[in-house]
Length: 168
Image 1 (spheres, rainbow, N blue to C red):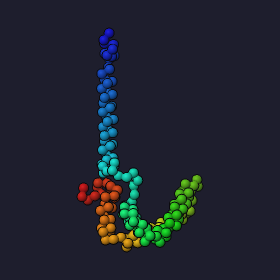
Image 2 (cartoon, rainbow, N blue to C red):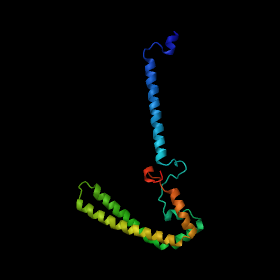
Image 3 (tube, one colour):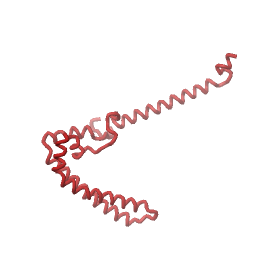
Image 4 (cartoon, one colour):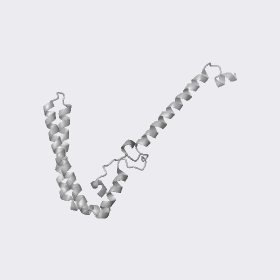
């Protein structure tokens, strides 16, 4: 009677249990490997980093300065920022136009090429405006603020492939 309660009467029960344990071990190793790979790829700085990724440039750097200084820089660069707004709107419209042509049921190669050319020209104008804004911001930063930019940028720069870093 005791052999029925422990399940000893079934032949091969030990083999099934061994397969289940082996499967569990394989699954655990896969999960540990995936987690390790993720942490290695993202530099292990997952929990302390913000959820939103941003580009570490002069515009985002100014948002880390004290509030009074930020307001002052906003006023000093207001014209450059105002110039950018319609250009960014035009850039979004040019991208949408290109995507509409790309996803149309009947593909028009010439219309797509023309829209790509308009997109490139609009993108160039928008990039020129942002670089002008960078110049305006840089001209109004103090020497200490300019010196603080590079360490801040290095700290907030997205991690790259380890092969991209000559030190590793």
